[in-house]
Image (cartoon, rainbow over all chains, first blue to last red; front, side, top):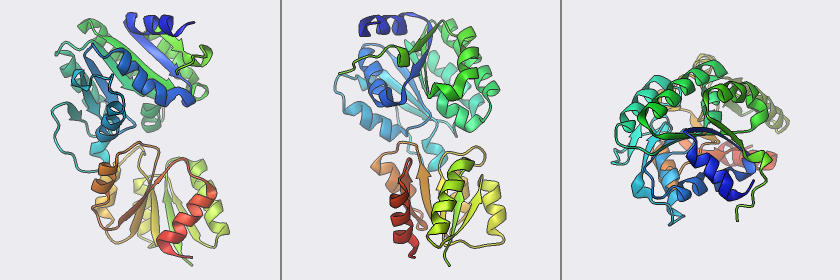
Length: 185
Length: 117
């Protein structure tokens, strides 16, 4: 599959589980917002702080950070938080109810895409797949109802077989970049 | 003998770090979460705590607020910025930040730097 058709599948389907090889992860987290620079994005970060994510985005001038609002589940769990206009800080990645409520609120503001980075991190905190799948099902429903689209990152697939199987029943699209062998440069 | 407590929910990592540090002549204690860490601190006062930043249970910010008299170095796979690091290390006993994954030699050199032989 070509890079263009991958992005077509990724951006046109309402919800996609994007399985990312770990070696491509850093490339992907900047490539996708770059491709969506004219869209309003709600980016949920579960493994990078707001400041670290902004630094990453700012390294790529093509990424329109003015169109991105962030839900940061990390910073508040490790230290003090300064309020930001473009970010909501939730208590921790374990706070799935809080996260779900905040996503609902953000979806009221004409968001085009919700990006969740990543389900892999959610599993570290939750230990079991069941709460993550329940959360995922809930979020997918909210995203579809709002008319937005959702992209859910997951890495290291051999550890997440059940999650991927269950997700395939929830998501409209499963895209495994491990099988696509894309040249990113 | 210097005592190092490793607080990490990844049991395998804890065991590996213990094996490395024991060989270097440190006494290494493992705790799998914040609660276990507190319980063990009632019985022993380590020279250094290696504290994983991403664990289920009590958020690390709550743990570190309760531990003010023991040196702490964070272990983390979370990507944080320099300003975040400076913010986190405002508490005077939080002395370092070790990024995962780390190499054996890197860990040993860091522990020697932080607590001595």
